[in-house]
Image (tube, rainbow, N blue to C red; front, side, top):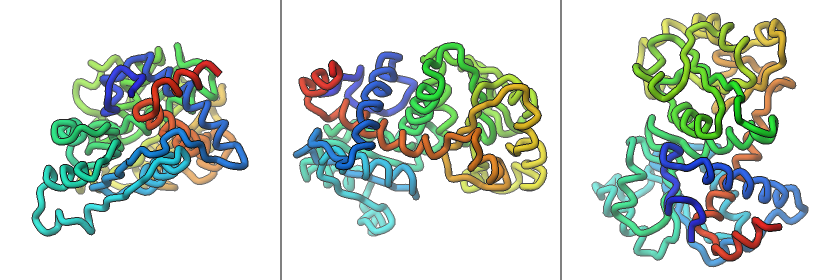
Length: 316
């Protein structure tokens, strides 16, 4: 059924440039659907999709559920906190029981890196990674890439700086893989202890000077400090982090060229980004949210839709 190079959507490390381009093109098609008075199409009628979230989520979970319903799929939602996992049931038993209910596709978020790949060994359903620990978050990267493509027309030669807690960020890793494949240049910027060792092996540059990164970039993707993953003590204080790496209007107004500001959310306002920046004319954060629904519709459709219908719609 899939018109992508793989049956599943586990990460952008495995995705091809053609896959990314296809998802962007189909994403634009669905963005037009979202602008219609009736924002629903019958593309996945009769397809059963389970959303398995073993970790808290707001944006990603709501975005996927909305995308699935806009495509007319039948949706079931699973929450680990109210499941039989609390009674001692194993992850394998849980997902195999869900699969026995004739589920065609599974969207999963899990705190363990590699869990989505492991899931492909337990069930025959199409698996879509909604974030696996600190490994990858490929659908977030796809909406970031689509938003940049929409703004600039092409990613080839585009300079994108990813700023903040790179060490704990699955968003950063997926963006690096995807942006590199699309021909963009990537710079990582943050405190030295929040930049992974050997990350430059992924064909990125590294700076610990925010002003240098801002002067270089056409667009920046601002990441939050993930205190729930890092434990205590990796940053001396919120005030000090903001002083050296916070995105403020004062910093942006000092630049020669206007740059685009993105943020995957949730935002720590007044820490990595100020409210007047997040709501200002540099930011395309709300565009990212809408593109998130469109590109997730694209991913679901390309993996679970009827291949003849997909190709027919691509020609329109």
